[in-house]
Image (cartoon, rainbow, N blue to C red; front, side, top):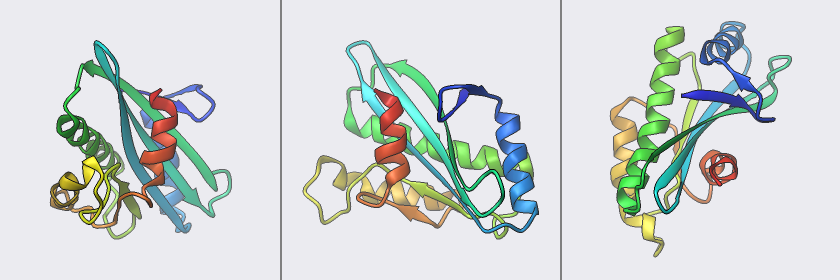
Length: 160
């Protein structure tokens, strides 16, 4: 995947990981938030994963990166939600693998673009299964709507 800064400028994945590794190793307070969204079109669906950083590390206080990928049309909502969750999980796992960061040192939160089980929204039926999928990859800090801003706002902004 090709990664971009918030302003649309290209950045290499290695550079993102090196910056995060430096921040984590400095002992800075931080939170890494990863979320995805998608936009179906008539022949392709656009998927965006956002990697957001909140930190007290100089130069990385508030920033985000995003990557876009297009797939053959995913008009089925369940397939799109699964692909969104998978993109977020894959990004979090790649970040962990690249930097050899131990789970307890890294504060990674996954945002899913689904509603709670109690909601009557179309995505609410998938909420529990997607949360459990994320947990299966050893990510316990998970947010769903209305608290999944990385997916619902940042990734959504770049999916259109």
